[in-house]
Image (cartoon, rainbow over all chains, first blue to last red; front, side, top):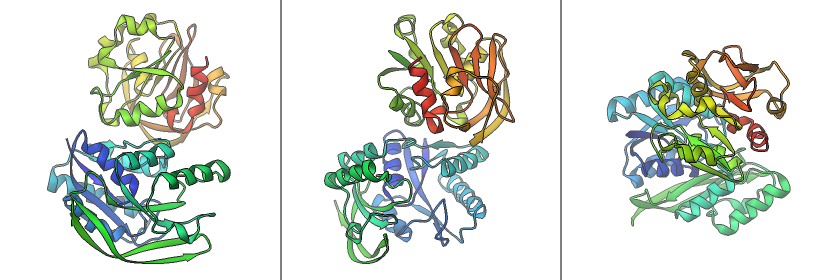
Length: 226
Length: 179
């Protein structure tokens, strides 16, 4: 079955795509770039770099820039999925939704209205298991944003590894944080995984940080043959 | 041993990660079988059975009911989730009616019961385009504005939920596993 990936460039959407690729043909990416920083559906740092990731994956990208008005952005998502149906004959979409019933139910409704399949292969997945899955499958994932206590500036631009998962697990036990950032505590950016035909190298970046909120801005990249 | 029956259309499907794994992750020990591979030995070996849900586009199980003939005489604890409650109903002659509910919904408790009382909240996650009327030998424990939500057989420990407890009411599955 031909699928489109609802793609933000973070670890969950890329892991969803990767798992879907084992059973189906992911033929394009759909990115909704929201100008509304409060968007519950689509806002994430470095979303503009999904174009670079689409080149690394060698998959076409359908990108829609939205002002992020609450229900209007859902209509825009529906239009983008319709475009994927028309241009790439997709029969379903795959998401990286883990626990958000808000996101999952809205995407399910859109797919139901369009009469296409909706796949959520990470649905209800244990967050530590998800992080370990990334390591086991050789994903290179940067921390691209932190938005909660006690995340300090030193987290920005770090790559998720076993030692970091250990720290996140400890923070989960002691402070009840969501270790994979399901509560919006952290955002991520994927530069490599087995589905990537080329690897993304970050050549220039900057960071902003204040009071337990910070962003790792990726300013320049290059693609490297694997 | 709890047996989880995967009702997704194909065996080892991508959708099993979404409709079966969230259930098996809650259970400490269980076995999984695809509905097309059910046989008498597998059913008899199980202490309890959970019948999973499946995607919205896979609604309507009337063409597969021959795999569930054993359900009518099953006496051990059983929980049918979404597709599972529909299968329970259809093997008892109920017909499916089109009712769509997607996303968090608040249900109304109608009767006290071990399983209903295990729920920490009455907000549940719905994902269905069809539901059934109450089968004759069942009682209604909870409902939403649009359809039946939790049913129990009048004499057997056989339950069905139209919603997906593995999403927002995991404690219900834990309570069932301890029944």
